[in-house]
Amino acid sequence: MNANGTFEITMHPDAPYDVVDGVSLGRIRFEKRFSGPLEATSVVQMIGARTPVEGSAGYVAIERVTGSLDGRQGTFVLQHSGVMTRGAPSLSVTVVPDSGTGALAGLSGRMEIEVVEGKHRYGFEYAIAE
Image 1 (cartoon, one colour):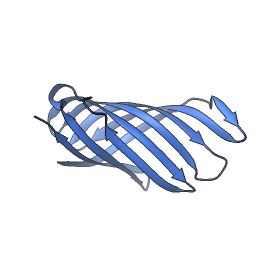
Image 2 (spheres, helix red, strand yellow):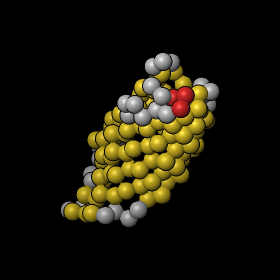
Image 3 (spheres, helix red, strand yellow):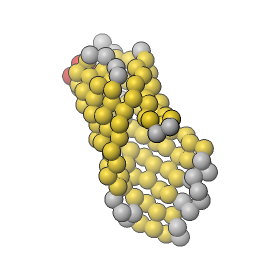
Image 4 (spheres, rainbow, N blue to C red):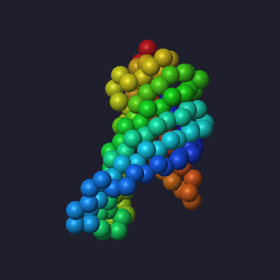
């Protein structure tokens, strides 16, 4: 099944905790509010690396989503892995296996995220094992 919609995001960055030769490591906490078939909120904990080369960075994150997906209530966890090589992005966002609760138990899937003109959009391809 597919779910497509939008989300709003609020960032809460910490100061970098490690910097060596212009490569900095830092943490950011995000709060999201999803609209569309996924009516939910989430908290994201991210660790990232930024290099002195413009547009080159990487991050990993864990995100707990709480709400409803196509009317099914519960929670699930997304795992993010992102790399940007001189402005060319590569992002993988997948449901952590067996992380679904409530009516979302058995959830699996992948989420695509895009930002167009400052607006965040998601595409979620998922299945729920019965």
